[in-house]
Image (cartoon, rainbow, N blue to C red; front, side):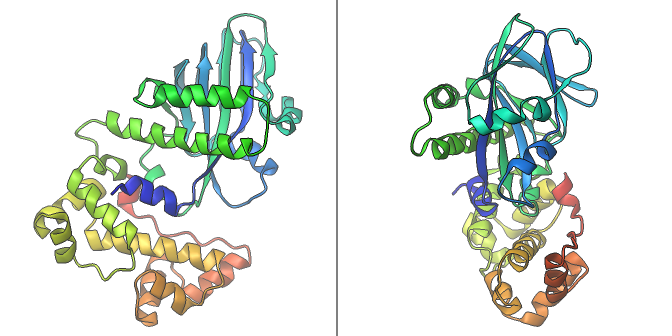
Length: 331
């Protein structure tokens, strides 16, 4: 069982590469991140994770005052889709607005775009991952605002790097966009796995918790069947440890009990269903493990300060009602 795969499946992760760059130093571009690519996408209201994967040369990425040095095989991820700078060499004047300068190239697929001062060459591809903003918060909240991972140095990194190079260089054909999209998803998942493996033993939070075999198994079980009538005793038995020890692992890594975590996830799933489907409140309640509509209404109102029916009307009327902040999700 793989809890990361279970969660990524639930958030309906969709990826794509949208820009293939062959830049030469000196160069510096300003990317407006998710705000820049969103108008070009066919879907709305998704959370966009931005990333850049270097296949040749070197560069730097800057988010505010934080600067990250990049080499071939590195991926830099902006989990929040924040605006940022990319460049190589000394700055000359103001950074070029990437989405304004290269807007016409977005319609050309992954045809290589050349830009810069004619010096040292840097090749990279830009992509995004789209996911449900409410559900993906579970794993994104533990990531820094800018993250570099030498993903190509991992066990499958060279295969991913070579596959992406081949896909962006090959002529577009039937199914090519699907292949590139799946490769970007694989790249992102491998990035998360590499990040998790590099965490220190002292680190806490959802991603760090996946390194604890018993906690990871418990999370995978609950995410695989969230509507099951779970008890701490039953979960501990399935995992093969005492209920006290299991509760301790949840508290240590997530800051909440197993049932509190389950309830939080159920409410996130329920909110998504109320917003995006036409299922009745009773159907949604049963889908997330509540046989009593009254009990579901109470739990939902505690999470969103509004009963399910009001939440649905508000969302479909354009007003956003956010879930209350759960401390453990912000670790």
